[in-house]
Length: 354
Image (tube, rainbow, N blue to C red):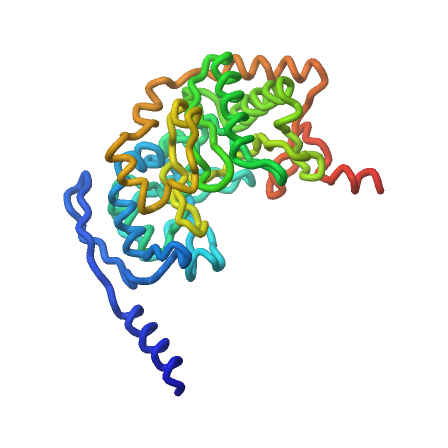
């Protein structure tokens, strides 16, 4: 065996056998959580290891669980580092600790199945041990999974646009939601975009909430058609920010607040205040290594968010108004069954050529 190859094999054997234990405090007391291969590098460019990920999750556990706890969650897991392939765990994996909760949810196909719920910091460390990098939480509480208590809009910059354009769209969406009687909150996506949230009372099921999101997105599009779009087909979006209304559809989720992202710098989807966003923030500066210090210094901008929960009735009124004006349903995600009133699922350019 060549010397460099022998060294690599010895290193891999060591990583496979090494392990450490983290003591994690929580509502049921201290749990000793095993982290195998703690020196394994998950983010090669940043050099962030599996142990650092686990320690990060413990450090941000309070605001993380306030934002993502008591919700069905999908775990985006990696077989290697973040430059490789990932897969999603929705159902409780074999060997999950008995103290980790699950809740039965209904998917778009009408099929039901248990999905994981995170209730304490030790469960987050267990997820990291399972090579979870991204946490995707549902917009509804576990006990009322069919009724969202969060309205979410993903502001997705298209080619030719960047974070600056998403920032302008976020302020526009804040104004639209305020006119509808809702309080808007914002976080970085961890990349170039922003996510707008509004806490709502869990009074309506997913389809109604999606329609409320479409109504808000259409209102912003009417005001600034040159900068934002609701066009589902990429060929129609142009150099504008896409207002992704389908993130409000059942079983569609985005990276949760304080979730790491599988990007080179180990960035984190980070809540920011509107004043911070106006003054200027760099989403690349919010990482697994920097966010704990930020929280310790500035606190959580989303603390107490759900104390200002509002109604989507005004937005639903706008939806009905738009229906009367001839604006109908918009396309659903491709994995959905055909939905009532939905337009054909074919790209406009292909439809013209048929």
